[in-house]
Length: 90
Image (cartoon, rainbow, N blue to C red; front, side, top):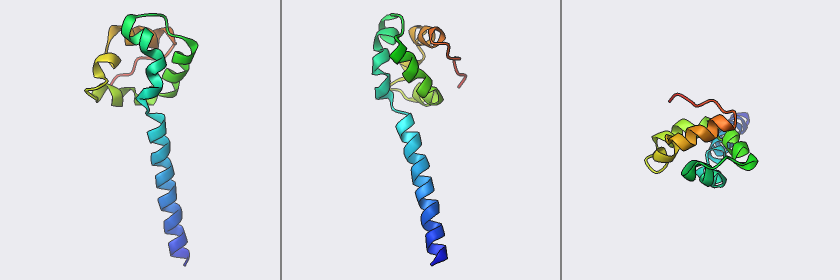
């Protein structure tokens, strides 16, 4: 019985970690940054907050063909710099 409980705890811990990572990397949350990334407008406070929350995901987005042209764009780099976020090296 103790082995079953221990295994269940391990499975739940792994599932929770995967769920947290999946929630963290949600490109849809960056929609608020569209004006800054697409047209070069100044990023809003909400945009900067979302960028900070997802900064660990930037390299993942940069490798994704659906997002790479936006993530690697000069406007994206300007938005990161304006928000005080270090541009990652992937």
